[in-house]
Image (cartoon, rainbow, N blue to C red; front, side, top):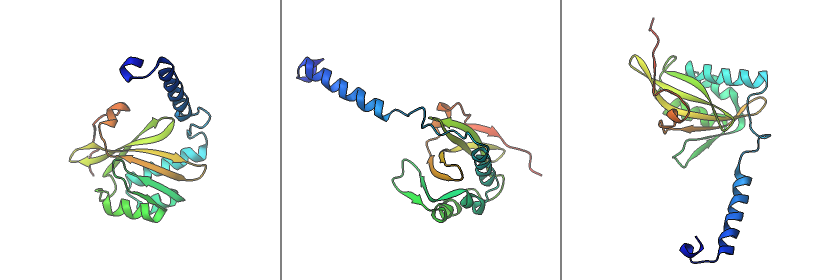
Length: 166
């Protein structure tokens, strides 16, 4: 390996040692994994789902912390403040009313998350994957991935059946 890199064995070993140290620092700490361990956090997540499924932007805004951050990789921009995030959802989300969205819960590196599905005729199609960070009383960070290939990674179907309209 050292010959391929044009260096010494000692230098390669040193690089590997530094790389392992950096990886161990970047790995999630089991104590820091944020799972909804309290009834209040569980209620918060349930209200998040209900607000999206009802397409109730005002209810969503009340769930966000004052310094909430909303990001959407691969887009480089991000939004901060409940009002900014609410405006984003109200103006850019293609949903138009209750029943247009469905959400299925997942876990992403110990964080709560949801596969979001958008109504398309008689079924719902994969749309976004939300990964949340929650405090005891608010959602303070949402990463909304538009890469629907992530649904398979989390064991989520590409489509789910729609419900009969009344």
